[in-house]
Length: 184
Length: 420
Image (tube, rainbow over all chains, first blue to last red; front, side):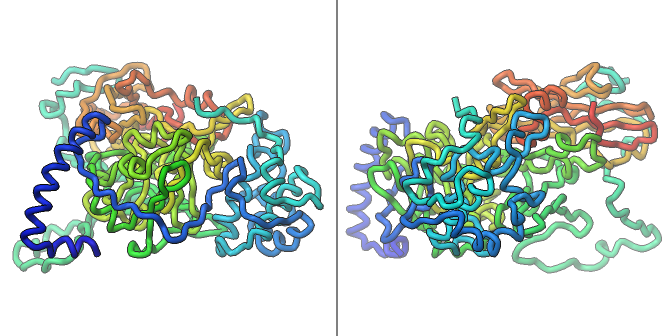
């Protein structure tokens, strides 16, 4: 909309704008040269969003939502929403998310949540954004915590009654947590 | 006669025009599976005697020269999740037409209305900022020619114990090259104002998978752009319309398509696609995370897999080379499986983080040969042999494979993928 309005500037405005622009060109050019930003003038059109949800959950868990769930609560949901692709035990070939314990570092590495993933928060983050495959983002936080707990239970990382929430999930230590070389 | 510069018939790179040989006018090589065009010499050429078709709004290739993506794969549980590859054997030059740029989607191609799409920058910034598509179109832009390669490219040559009899595109077509135009990301980050702990950005897509990747700030503020145009036209939906991150030289996955959020953080997010996927496992059980730069690599695209040499004489060996570290300094070609090498001519004006086309003439008189290419980038990195490339990682690690591609040529002129 602002672009259209700009086209209807009257001559006086245009003259003022030209003067202002020439002044700011000089200023911005000087500033840019100093900070190596180049010669471009930038319009600064970013605005404060009305509503915005933080959807990216890191190992610190700070972006985890309220809510909770355990493996006991997640079992039926998992069977209903996840088992078709991942198998009841999480070991369906091609989409296995459980098993492979101790296989990393052998000549038959088998990467699953339990054998390979370094952070438990990644499981919540991924289920919340990308699963179930045909109904992405349909699960509530309680359901997501419960399925997260069930997958961790399938991998024998937590017990069936352990409650996962924004405080407990980041504290879960994954078996392969030390298996990665970080960026140098 | 033109001088031989390496074994099995390689000629000096400047010798192509001077070379003589039987059937020099043989034309380009076609894969044998390509349909033969029936010649009907008795008929008059109708295009000489009848006016042609009218103009149209958005052109299409000749029906005689149609290109198709290859290896269109789909996950059994989700047809939108998979990849398709560029038919490298059918292209020349360095630019990939948008219609055959390789694809890799994790939950299909979204149909995004740009009027409803926004990009939000938040996290460790002084002010959270949101931009509309129209906003971004008003920013100063840059145009660069860059390659894009999936980190899983050439995985067939890693996982199959016997070399798969496939075309170069089927084997190695998760590489493409385009002219990308967009807004330098640092303009937007500077507008939001980075705080002291702004060490990483995390880009998130607006597809159903909302694919999310972390990028170190040093890289994100280097030559990364929010790309809006590809080869002069707005991005195609399959390439991230209306906007995508573009991180030149890095594994394709971090150039997040359908970009809707950039969260600035002190640490990486350790998302599923940077931990469970796209991390590189070593023999000792340790895996590299954020191994983003694509290694120096080259491929001969002609002659290549499933083609047939249908005459004796001089051929042009031609291919592509690239490096995530910068530009290509040299490409050498061997016709005897790496025993002797000759330097190829390099032909591209775009020398940084782009595809380089190399060419060298070759005399084929029915001898068996194993054709290979070996690239060196301007940082001195040399493309490894297949054995050396495989030795870097644990068995079946499919990412960041840049070993030599070898094509065997039989006495009959059949060209086939081999491990050599």
